[in-house]
Amino acid sequence: MIAGTPLRLRCRRLVTASGVLDDAVLVIEGPMITAVETATDDTVHAAGDAERIDGWVVPGFVDTHCHGGGGATYATTEADEARKARQFHREHGTTTAIASLVSADLDTLAAQIETLRPLVATGEFAGIHLEGPFLSSHHRGAHDPALLRDPDPAVVTGLIDRAGGVVEMITLAPERPGGLAAIEAMVARGVIAAIGHTDADDSQTAAALDAGVTVVTHLFNAMPGLHHREPGPVPRLLSDPRAMIELIADGFHLHPQVIAVAVAAAGADRVSLVTDAMAAAGMPDGDFVLGGLRVAVRDAQARLLESDGSLGSIAGSTLTMDAAFARLVDLGQPIERVAAMAATTPARWHKLDEVGEVRPGRRADLCVVNDRGRLQRVMQSGSWVASRATEG
Ligand SMILES: [Zn+2]
Image 1 (tube, rainbow, N blue to C red):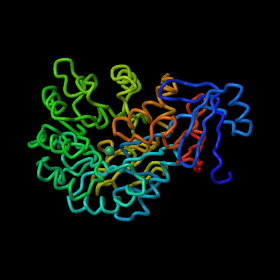
Image 2: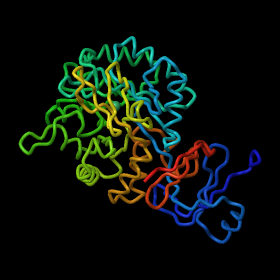
Image 3: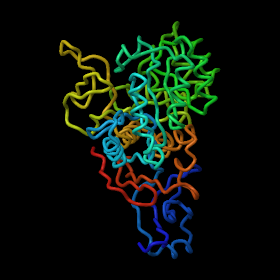
Image 4: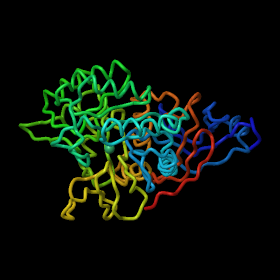
């Protein structure tokens, strides 16, 4: 392509926020989408030299909860390691990523944030998500119990301020002392308050929403389950329009029926597919370290490795966004709805206004999937990047 010449893609199916277009021409100049045209005689003529895309063009995936992949982690003080994990997920369709850090002591977190900060500045990451340390010891998952602490508002805001504007979201257990005030302080600083790894009951959940919670960290996982007399946090989080719910659709964290009921209850405009992936994603089974704890991956399922050699809590996933996308399609969700959950909804909720939709003025971040939702190609900022076809 000659510099300055627009790239024209003639797409068999194109998913826009307002519907699916058949035989549409997408015009890309530099890193941006500049036009979306349906195939009238004129545009088809003009698109005579357009590249044909025999599949579905959907917005590039937006993964707002991910710890690493390809053998590398974002919880590092080596920028190249974070870049390696980022590239691994990019090849699986993640064109926008928020880097998640697991519980650590505050100085370690600050050092990891300092490492990632330049990568946020250059756009490698859309921000940083702190999953802890303000979590419930009853639902700690793979977080080291010795590191968990109350969300004292002064500590929370100190951490945010020290990070210099790159903290996008913090997950906390709102029932811990200081939780509600911490949520209010976070919201006042423009940081998303996410409820998760929590023991909150229904009324504590309501209070957290009133205080400003707008995201639910992997609904169902690491929180009390739904019981008809003891509802726990799930029903309110499913139904309250103020919160977006993350789902880990790896076929292991959630039963397919639970995914189906969650999507039906919340709608695609309030559901976000996340990987919650750790370094083991894309790697052979083996032993890994997550937040200082030993993790064993067997049959692509990550669990804590206890000192007696037994397997404990689920410890993140080995999921990639293309696999999550394909799974939702396999569960019978239409491709345009899955595209909303994989890109449009998380982008809107996180106010990532440059991405998440295929339309003029947005960045040319695209995924191409086939009729079965399998990833074929990935475009980032107007350039095709190395992509891997989803298996299966
Ligand atoms: Zn996580």
